[in-house]
Amino acid sequence: QVQLVESGGGLVQAGGSLRLSCAASGRTFSSYAMAWFRQAPGKEREFVAAIARNGANIYYGDSVKGRFSISRDNAKNTVYLQMNSLKPEDTAVYYCAADREYALGASRQPSAYESWGQGTQVTVSS
Image (cartoon, rainbow, N blue to C red; front, top):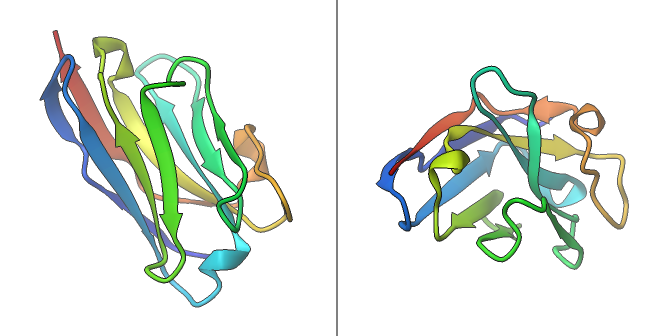
């Protein structure tokens, strides 16, 4: 398994932007599909975005489409989530996840991912 560490969370006003980073350990980062999920208090974990091993296939949850952008730098073992036009309903703990099973795409299901980071809090004030 790969170890994941998220960073970049914080407090931002509505309409603002944040960029989350997820640094992965190990030398096989390019073998993993990567994803971001989020979980607000009292709610289920929600799919945010995912990116395939080579970055060619990208997927977004409906609630963030057009506002968030996922990318990866395999040379730096890092995946990013650029979040623009933030809304109070984006407030949640954001988790990075890695999956080695998908060869060409990436799953939207949390159960598909075998490695998870500890999460980073994003709070959007109105």
